[in-house]
Amino acid sequence: MALIAPFRGLRYNSEKIANLEEVVTPPYDVIDDQAQADLLRRNPYSMIRLDLSKSVKSEEMTEGRYQQSRQLLDEWLAAGVLRRDETPAIYLYFIDYQHPSGRRLTRKGLVCLTGLAEFSEGIVKPHEQIFRGVVTDRLRLLDACRTQFSQVFSIFPDPLGQVMALLEPAREVAPLGQCQDKDGCRHALWRVSDPAVIAQVRELFRTKCVYIADGHHRYNTALQMRELMTSRQGEVAGASPFNFAMMYLCPMEDPGLSVLPTHRLVRLPRRGAAALVELLAAGFVAEEIRGGSREALVAEVLLRMDERRAASMTFGLYHPGEDRCFLLSLKEGRMESEGFDSIPPELRQLDVVVLSELILGRYLGLDHHRCEAEHLIDYFSDPDEALDKAVKESQAGEGDSVVFLMNNTLVDQVRQVSDAGLIMPHKSTYFYPKVLTGLVMNQLVEGEKVDG
Image 1 (cartoon, rainbow, N blue to C red):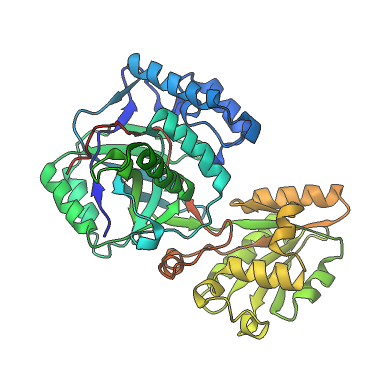
Image 2 (cartoon, helix red, strand yellow; image 1 turned 135 degrees about the vertical axis):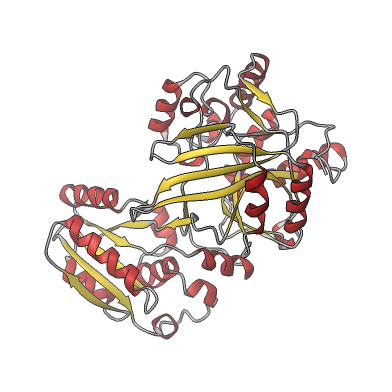
């Protein structure tokens, strides 16, 4: 099944870069224009100058954009700002963070190379749709720089905890680097280079498949890079670095693995809370939550959603124009009676599918194409941010900007959907915290062979 391998990580030189917090960045696809400007001001050696953000128009995707990154990479390598480890290793990457519930957690993962496999092979499994334009940009950057700057975040089954039980005792005492991100999450990286331990871990993965949690486009970029090299060379050898993707792998059973909900702000014609609830009455039992500030109302409905999720699928609905909040409980068998029994059961059990198909599509008449074309939905991991924007829009506009509060997608649901070869709707999962770009990178050097 999954083939993993150690690699010689490319890292910032601590003798040149004293503070990693100034140079590492979030993944490119969550960096907007303002964040990009802030990162550029922080340090001239910021990873944003190499990995580039997604905030680019098609006409700006010129060869110069990617060659500039390559030139900077060469300059930083020559100046010793970045240097490559001498010995192939697997890297332990732990993140200590505070969950929105207030709990303090540590997510434990490893960074290694993973052999590329087409999705049809069932070794690496996706749950998300790929958008071709994004891959094109990433492919041109990878072809120019020949460096995988960030990891594909994947999860794997390990119910007995065997992988971490082998790696943790074998890690070097001192971390290679550690830093804190803007959310207060503490990131730390250690090296494991013991060949015997690495061999045991590799053997364990031969019975496993891996599931992409975050980074579908990065993985697809690696596949396309292999195709590109095959077209140029005639073939890509099994041990070629172009046959591997750098992955951050976390056990599915890790107690620090968190998937946060993504709440929806939906722009509707102005009709009032009572009329909106009436539209949903065929499929949902509505219970109004009263008393307290809007933040207190939302906190209460989120608490009840979590308490009841084992018994029934529930949503929160906040109407800012009237400062009213409701708990919506799906009536049993409603998806089937509304004609959605053709949707596979692995998808019918997802809150995001019920929201998009039944609530938005059927009851409110907003299909996916219209929502995209008219920009009717915004997505928020922080419910307070969603509330603030909804209130401002409702006060300023002619319509109602309402917030649908969501429960998170469960890790086991991701596995079930992926195993069935299905795709989840957009913004179904938000694995938190994000893996930082720049703690460790992987150079693709023609002629080298991946170890082991």
